[in-house]
Image 1 (tube, rainbow, N blue to C red):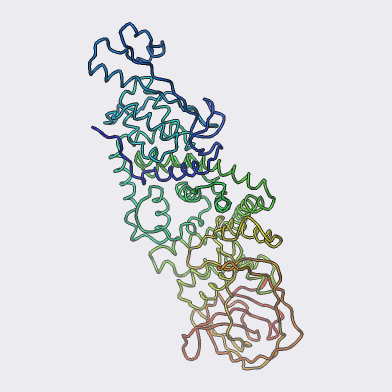
Image 2 (image 1 turned 30 degrees about the vertical axis):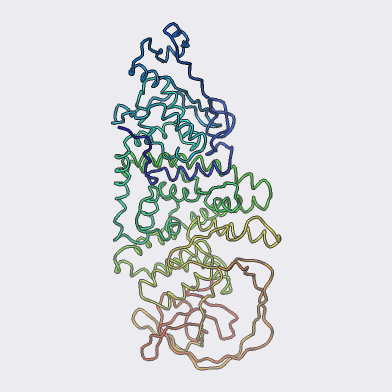
Length: 631
């Protein structure tokens, strides 16, 4: 069979590996992680990066007579290099040409193991016929050392060629050189490269197995949006076609320690870039970097076993995993180099991500029961049963209120800051989902607006992005120019509601002094007195303190507010409204309530939400906000 140019489908692992190796080639990095082709190093570890120093012996001249057969060296004789036949024959010439060839010698790059002579262990178990033989491998090795793209498509042909003469020592030298290029370039172990090449020896079987792996995620029609995204994230490891993934980080960030395959897929996307010295890429990678600690080889092996993956899928994932680990080492070195040049760069790129990740983990451990309950309800929320979603309001509101009241606050702004902090934001979303399930549009709108007034909250990944933005704001408050720009730090989006940091909190269109509160089924009806009053006027002035950026890139500044000493006349035109008893904290006759209503009403009683509850219409003492009693 004549096959010298088969290129395996890029979706079968070559795409990811090529993207990282090409990245290394293009930027000429000479560190130990995914180095460029070329360069040099001694055997057994080498002294510098690259795909390894390459050298070759000269082919011995063809003997002109049988008397010159003695020109073979002892090594050649031991290796089985045949002499030139005394009498010409085509068979003799073929044998001589097949075994007398240049052997490229590729040294191990720094930090990489030496492969040495390599006998392909798959030759006895596959139908590989050895097409091309060692001479084809020599050409592939040269292509790899020179950084040619065709090297990335050579795995199947190379795996077959290794079986032409697998027990011939000199052919094993060439096979070892080919494997060494992969080891040097990817950072993967010789075993991982060997296991992967074994599956590539029968490219039809390999493609069939990858296709079969993709089929397990092909039908996601009845899955929840969450499951679609998470399944799609894992499917992306095989470049499977299928429905697009809309918010993978939002769903992934719900998990404190997600499956390793999901982390592998996430970090594989983070690590793809042409130039690792590009500050925009390094900033983006810095936001992903804390997740690298979740890359556990033992957990990966357990997931591959429990997931019943076939041989091609297992080998591909193991090679990806080890390649990514080497890439992380290289990127860490690049980050450290950048950070060493400027303390402000260190603060944003290294200190802020580590601090934000650690603080989120500490907050989670302190409120684990509440967060886990919210996450457990989310499973129900993304489930298929409408009835199962209902009946959660009392528990959700109690959890949210308990957390918010566990910290001191006296103003609406202070309350909102707690309600939208890394833990409060999770519990607020839990409450919002319950209000949607119960069909309370006004309550849901109120909590949605509250969430929107804060920063995006979800889990440690969101926390890292927010922490880096905060550190950058501190730097840019003092500097006119800085290497990192706000849009270099991507804040993940997703979910039904995500805080924006600049949305207005819910507007209370109506207000009044409560005259009576009456139960009506599971809700309460609040009625008001008709009266006029005056209140203190307040004005706000912007400071030069940056607290964030709007979507168009313009900065947002903190405001200082004060009372002017003047009075503003107000007139109550409050209509009665009803609301869930769970959100009626602090409402009783005599208090002053600021509320909003929807357009739905019965007997002039509107569906509403109590935004703020004050002790009286002078609004000096806050009783409750967003359904939570002041502490």
